[in-house]
Length: 238
Image (cartoon, rainbow, N blue to C red; front, side):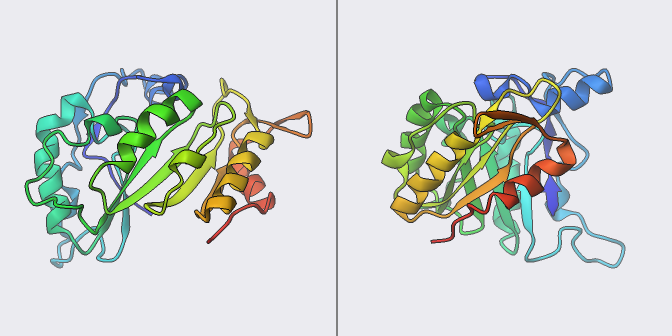
């Protein structure tokens, strides 16, 4: 899995940010995760090895800006060059997750049109309130590849109004870390059934650290959270 974090640090804006893993990791190194800075990897898509080959191998999916938010206000000017690199490396697919879908249009490249074919934009929605606010915006934007991520899933969410043909998949997961809030299997399964009804692919990514199923609370170690989600057997490909 290739990653590109052109900038680091973020500001918390909604309930899903409460126990942010970036803040958790930075605090262990006595760093302030609310300080936003460019990283040494800012121009990673253009970097080459000594033999002249790109460090990011053509054909890879590049998980982009996972230690910040691509549409963060402080990164508005940096994002101009980031978009240029994304457009230049059309041989890569850039996968971007954001809580700031409402800022998508700021400094959008002039040749964007109906979207770059090598970019997937995923809007998160951890609660019904955030789904009702963010998903109508996502659906109305000129983006070629769109996805929804409910992670950390904090309550039961009705996505059915937003599960249209333009949504390529829905990913659901619980919250990790010592302070993790509960994720209930009933909430996960409810979204799964909505996706089946609308014929939208669904992936149960991870249980989170505190997982309730059949009325029982399970404390699940980090290394087991993905495999336990897989055992549920509820992934769906339309």
